[in-house]
Length: 462
Image (cartoon, rainbow, N blue to C red):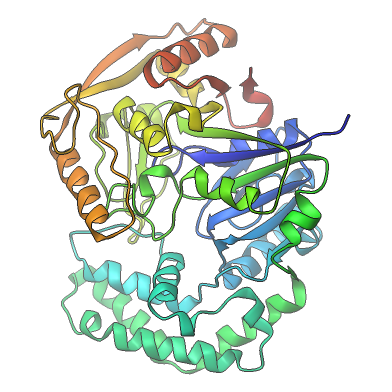
């Protein structure tokens, strides 16, 4: 008998956990008919298939190479310019003949314009040597402006309005006004040329014309659907649907490590609520993704960061640093932060399983390093007597202040690290058991997938 099942895939770190490969595996294994995107359009989810295909997906789902359709939900902040570029790359570099034929977009999805990207760049450069970290596409800036100036909000349904140019121009005027103090401030010497370029772009009225033209182009290519389409046409069908989220729990706006966070919410309960609000009556499986080690691309607290481990954990393939997102750091798997992410999500019962990526690198190294607790975790405002981070729930300024306090504490903490020896001759079954037994004991969630390589055939599921 046919059944319905939704898989919600969530990164349990600050991002870069390996969601792309996991979503590709789950969608392939279950023969999913649709991937539903939530979060922000700035995600870069890498996929490599056993057929030799490779791509970093952003707004298309990570099952695209298998012909799985993508639905951009109202919970994804869209970048039309990014959609157009991604479609071209899929068509001309990957041989996906008709990318837009595999895509639907909820008309209620919020739109980030290139103007928001400019604002994001300028604000990050204004922070000088005290970065917050941003991917720089303007997704966060658009979301924050939507909350402050709802009358200036542009949604996907507005892209076909006759007054679209006027709306973009109004956004530009507000952004210029908001950035007066920023632009008039001091910048690092090596940023000054970039600042001049960004300010010139912002002040060029022809940029508004360009944005308008590109947005109009998207409306000619994309299938824009009503908000009820998700429930009526997607979740009503038998078969599997995968909810692919961007970011990670540690960048959730109110429960992440503030201020190094996103403007959006990243907890799986928001994706679950979106599904349940449609009247969906099938099963929901929640999967948490994390590397077998710690990684953070960008600024923010990371107690186990160890530059000496970079070549051991990212051999010959270092993720590139950039001015806006920052450096890539790696280190021992931080069980304190992993337990915090699970607790912030509602506890171990919030997840049906963990998907652990990059365990092949652990086998190559012959050692698995884990941080069980910190030295210096003695402030009772933020830590339990056992050294665990306390979870405080809220969605106001006092909550942000509390999360910033956690971040300050983590910058002071030093990890206590233990090492598990890993035999290079161990079988994948033995390695799976090692990973599953260790993490079930330490975090209380069963391991359902372990990745031993980049493609779908390298991922073992139990």
